[in-house]
Structure formats: C-alpha cells, structure tokens
Length: 153
Image (cartoon, rainbow, N blue to C red):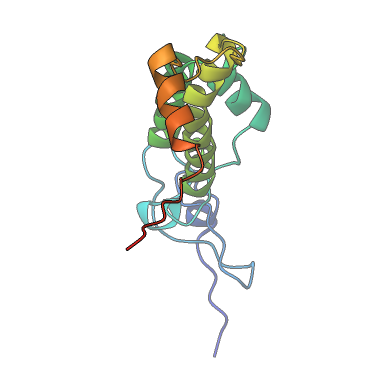
C-alpha cells in the first residue's frame, strides 16, 4: 500500500488550529476560531495564563491603607467581586479573601469600643445605711437582756 501524503499547502496553512494531538505529529484539521490560534473545540482546552499576583494585589489594595472602617472593607470586596467576574482570580482565593474581610468587619465594633472607651471608675464612697437617733434607740431596745420575773403563788 503506497504511503499517502497530505498536500503541503493544507499542512502549513496558518489558519488551521494549532492544537497538536498527544503523539505530537498530528495537528487538528479545523480552521482557527477568528484570530485565535485554536478552533472552537480546542480553545476551551487551553488554560488562560495565570494572573500576575502583583497586579491583583495592587488592584485590590490601591488607596486602601488600613481596614479599620466598613467603607474600606466594602471597597475591597467590590474590587474582589470585579476581579472574580473578570475571571482574574480563582473562586477559591476570592472565598478566602472574602472570609478574611468578614473577620475584619466583625472586629470593627470591638475596635471602636477600645478607641472610645473611658477609663473605668471605681467609687469608694458609697452611701451607707441611714442611721438616725430613732434607729439607734430601736437597736438598743433589741439588744437589752430579757428580764426575769418570778411569780409567787
């Protein structure tokens, strides 16, 4: 059986999908998707390049110096939502960052109490019971020894 060769014009066609099969020799025969190097089937298989962590960090934290107000935490969460919607951050990482910001948000009331707290006052001059002369006479009457009476009969 004679060996068949594909036409060189179809093999080197730059519009063809660039996907190579596991053997490395065969190339997909479909035409690329628009200006993409892959056909629609193989475009889904290609993973996007990993996002730049420095770019993500700067996007999330620009103009946020500390997270001691609900407004700053809200800004951070809004930016996080946008990055997640743009698929620039993984769902897992977004969930972790949202959890951490939730913990920060829950500590804000405690921080406010510490900042606005007045020193604790201890009062030593509490008023005692009202001891007037009538009370003194009544208490003296109760403390007298009982008298003994003898009856002759």
